[in-house]
Image (cartoon, rainbow, N blue to C red; front, side):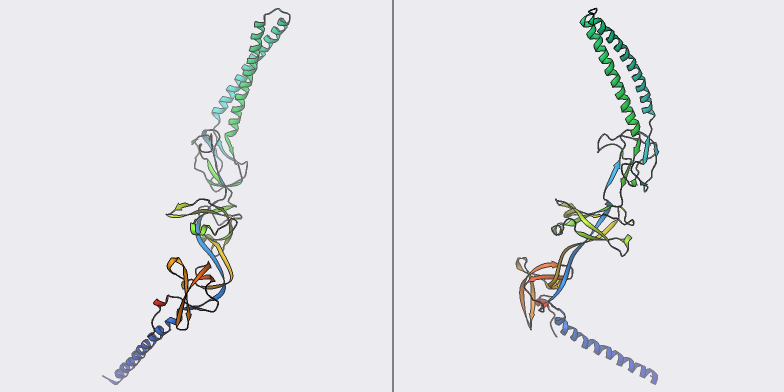
Length: 361
């Protein structure tokens, strides 16, 4: 081996030995200090407890527009996404059949008027003759009845005309409220059915006021007891980037339901001044505060263990010995738990149970 190569080999052996010696020394130090690293100090701090849950954005109020009369759609004046005002013309239904009915009703009215006028003249003549005792009671009563029937016939035909005219007015469907057209599931030329009640009839479109939005949530039954109406919540969504919106709890269901095999309660959060970047159907995250404690005696949540009888305990370090103490837990979050009694500020507690502490080498 030449001299340069020999020098390089000796240098490599020296460096390797240095790294080997460092590894041999560092391992015992880590083992020796492990016990100290698994100890925490009882401290006072403010604790905010909250839950994060996802929900779906829906309009706070929306309605289905249905026709009151059936027929073929003649004209659709709006499309989905269009903003509309109360009283705007939305849809026109073909009224040709109703116009024919109206013409027929007008003809019937003219005939009823002629019949009534004739019956009226006969009645008035019979009354004069009856007063002069020139006709019998029977004849007078018959002519009186004909006159009353004539009047009733006229009223009946006038009511029929009024019904036809009302139906003609309803062939023009007007917007019932300000809002945005969400869906239009019908097309021009389609035959639609008039709504005799809320649960039937053809839906022409859905309209909602998007200035106020609602978020539908399903809250675990464990957390339901810590919610209350009007509680403020914060909303996050991809559409908002790093911004948050404010909302409040507007509804808490009185009975539990099961969703995705999880029993919980339906909750609704209301956004009274909605951001235009939020739209119905979006999924958002809500942060709901459920507890707060100021200047609370606290420990890391990992320092609290369960014992027999589902009790909560901590292990207080006293020199080389440890003392097992039962504690009462208050407000908690993912990092810290409030300790209502059992330990004092400044005490040292273990983060692992004594039997699981690493042994010193």
